[in-house]
Length: 595
Image 1 (spheres, rainbow, N blue to C red):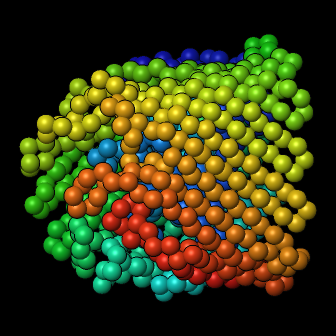
Image 2 (image 1 turned 30 degrees about the horizontal axis):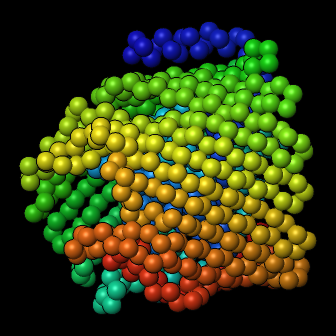
Image 3 (image 1 turned 30 degrees about the vertical axis):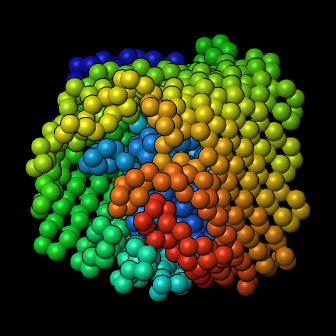
């Protein structure tokens, strides 16, 4: 506590020299200016309801650098592999605040249970981002932005497998626009399909989300609040067989306040994960809680714009598995960090840099850094180069868990550490933007399981090398998006890792046929890869997979819009991962009323 008070006192002393902030975005409590993102490889995508891309795992598929693997149809556990790194190496955030579920055994975030219809946009950060966001941003980060809207709408949907849903958004402003409020509700349920091919039982899901946002202007301060309450229920199956009484419930609660003024930026939030798995009379529960605060101050020293701050988290996890397999953990920890980020802009050169130190109550301190350089060749081309680091903290289960088969945690585990190097070129002209990057990431001291415990692998490193290209283009009534990634990913024994395709791509096109009608189509290519056989557990080679989706949007009048979607048009029969069935051709139609 003494250390915490010292940090806060030091920051508050500096506030008397503050200047007004020039920009307000959720993550600008970390960065001194919008220019800080110029050398960071970040891509922004939307959760488009008209394309039936509502779950965060499906939204990520718009970028070939983020590969999602869902263990069956919608509603099932979804892993994210960023630039070929492991599935627990991507940090998920809301408005710049981590939403890590500390009750998972290895820190994996389930990207299959969160409909992000409440989001205004989703930022995809590529490469280690420990300096910006702290623990667990080893290979990248996914930041879900929220905020008030200034319209009212209601939507109803119907689709294959008896899928029904609806959403309502209501907004209001009072006090001459100084106080703005938005409430958004979303519900969708489906009978689903069987997780296992030719299974007799359908495995459905039920999503319910409520989101409230507010925006207030009080003197020279701006205050934002966000509340999210989500419940996701799904049917599960056992190992290679139907299980008619196996279900999962994943509840999530998030409360946040952000205060921004010319003197400081303060973020306060708390989140809870409450998961329960019921199989007959057996009930397994997983609970995680995090309280988080970030305080920062932005100023300048001549040509240098900088932000200095502190980031503090108190988190805990408790779970208890019962039955033939019994495991448990009950532990809490505190993480206190200090950070600084700055920009230097001189003529055609721009440098962004930062450093951060994380002190955790359960393991050693970690220092991370980032350095990026940009050179504006002309009004069209910008060259970039940089390096950044990240780390994954050992999970509470890895350090202190236990089970009835002899497993005990290892409290002496150290962090997995990553370093990324990349260089690229950005192109921007009217109607066209693109970016090409070459990168390599090395992850050392990886945590692995063996001899009834976890340990750090100090003999080698997980290395990924690759390139990525993305572009957006607008041509009269046509809009085209392209994302392609080539990848080589090897473990510490220099063996190709599973579920990381060597080549992947996404192509999306929209065409305005008339003022009322828009047609669109998407193409996803998931290249040759290795996977694990579901019964023998042997590593097998898998062929590439391609899926095609298409749809339309039709404006009936200024108040009514109808959208239609058809997925997996080619009726590809595929399993991703091996042993988990994916849906065939499916449709979804919705009607939205604006008022």
